[in-house]
Image (cartoon, rainbow, N blue to C red; front, side, top):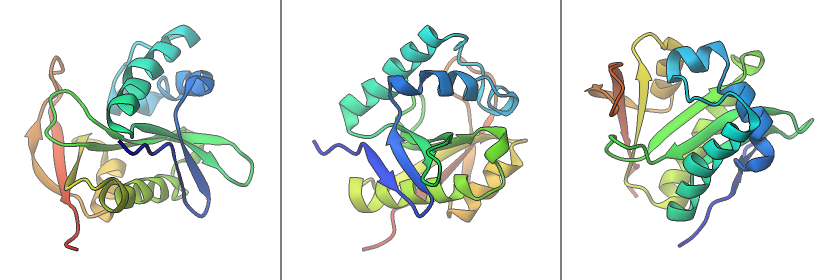
Length: 175
């Protein structure tokens, strides 16, 4: 199996999230927008952040060769957010997900990173399609997904979560 540990864009390195990112992930997972739009992941200290990385990132990477990536700005090595291709329980297909620390929103980093992973998903990894989920009130996420070409498919819910989610899809381009 081929593994994909890193990608690049003009401004960013997308590096597989690993244990050295625990403090950063602890901060990101507890930002107001993460909690509002993505949900509480019960990550409240460095140990639970490391467990999250093991269970949500490293285990998927070991299984599939891709997972979640930390976004690092090339100019100063600052960690800005995360973007990944996630195999989520209860979803049909691989989910393109992204989140940024509040101070880095609105600067094109999410679009740049998600666009690169979309490209990699189809051209390098060989996925036939992608999906994405977002809450009805997360208009910024919906806008970015539409910009990437995703189209609304249906309303869905994840197991053990009553929140209705917009489920969007995107097929690989024809060769």
